[in-house]
Length: 240
Image (tube, rainbow, N blue to C red; front, side, top):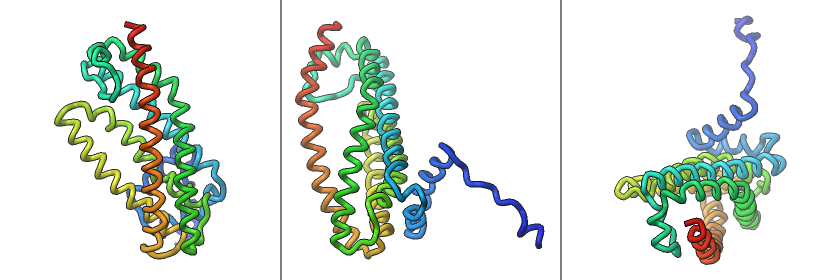
């Protein structure tokens, strides 16, 4: 018995292995107790780890999406972006290398923008949660939410380019939608666990900012598409 008690305890994995374990447990073993423990960890006392995760996830997602999109273009599947001329879609295989290069070059920008939107998203939620007498803080909620968001971001980067594959694409879109609802539930549970209040307060803290955040994202994306699509169209015409 004493030998069993004195047996060395295997250390927790560190580095990327430790990160992966945290992400995996956050999405496969969700509970208020687990999320409360995450919120109490040393890395949840500042924003560095959460922002690092989101930056890496945004950057890697952009790279993976760009690679898959280039492969699909080589195979003859053109991305469907509003505002792009038909001749670009027809020449998609020839432009695959160019689109891949653009994705690789802009991936750090995607990572940085992911951090900005993530900080705004979490900040508004925690601000509303404070009004409901929540006891958590921004760093704690950011850490738990980042642990939940990273796996879904990486999975979405795999599914998004496949949406152009006809019926198969619809299947991937349906899976992505289900994963989105599951991610929303986990984030709601994170708000409840970090702030230690009821489901009603958690729902109010989460859904009002989510609605406003989605409206903001739609406006920003629509503006970027309207500005960048003609510019990229001109670039492809010059190349061709």
